[in-house]
Image (cartoon, rainbow, N blue to C red; front, side, top):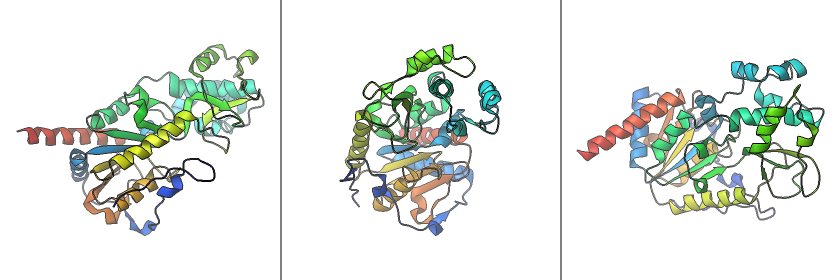
Amino acid sequence: MAIRLTGRKKDTGKFDFSQFLSGIPAKDYVFQDAAYEEQIQAAARLLSEADAVVVGAGAGLSAAAGLTYGGKRFTDNFKEFIEKYGSMNMKDMYSAGFYPFPTEEAKWGYWSKHAYLNRIEPDTLPLYQSVYKLVKEKPYFVLTTNVDHQFWKAGFADEAIFATQGDYGKIQCKKGCHPKTYDAVELFVQMNQSRKDCLVPSYMVPEYPVCGGNMAMHLRCDQYFVEDEHWHQAAEQYVSFLEEHRKDRVALLELGVGFNTPTIIRFPFEQMMRKNENWSLIRLNLKEAFVPESFGKRAAGIGADIEKSLCDIIKGVEERHSLAAK
């Protein structure tokens, strides 16, 4: 069945993910009881047979790659913030971001550290390189809720990435007064070097050039998130890719997507599976890998370490290619 994606709400002009939602009840979900090796071989087969691949990546992928927000990585890097604001307010990098910092100097003191640690300092992570190795020989597109820029670092083409929730390297007007974002990588580097007692110097605090107001991270956390020109272009490219390959065998490779924001990747992927009988779904998730039973052999839900699973799938794909070449 063809898939029709208009992509925008008529009243706001914004991209509308609700058009992808599935109405199938949760009772269709099952944990697949096949052995791990059997699931890996099924995933390798589906990817090998695919004409194109859509990668859907959530927070679980970056966590598996090493960008964890809690535990020792947090306490080692944010010791001064924990001591200053208290352990009850600084439990992990995610919750700490919602702390009501008393001044702009304090806010950017935290966020410059957060952005530097998760977006600027890390080189290309091996797990993201594995994803690229797996899909680079086929037409591909990446839909991700991650904001750490790792897909770009791994070599994925800019025109084939739609990062729906923003980017740690960009800032915007706090009130979204103008649909434009600004690159803040160099600013964050300077802030990270100049921070003292968890504060950045006042002269480094950014002001929005249009309204003169405060600025904020380019992260979707409230109604003021800016969907700039590049964001809308990426949204259109995603829709175009799906339309271009709607009659092909498309593998939906879902990596680390849970139920935090399921309406962006997880549920839409399932709806597209139901509308396109020659599409397939490979879902990798340590704890939430269950897939709809009705998908049958078109789906593989692998509840194991993502890094190991991807490595094994790559080996399986390579073995199939080697046998086909003989």
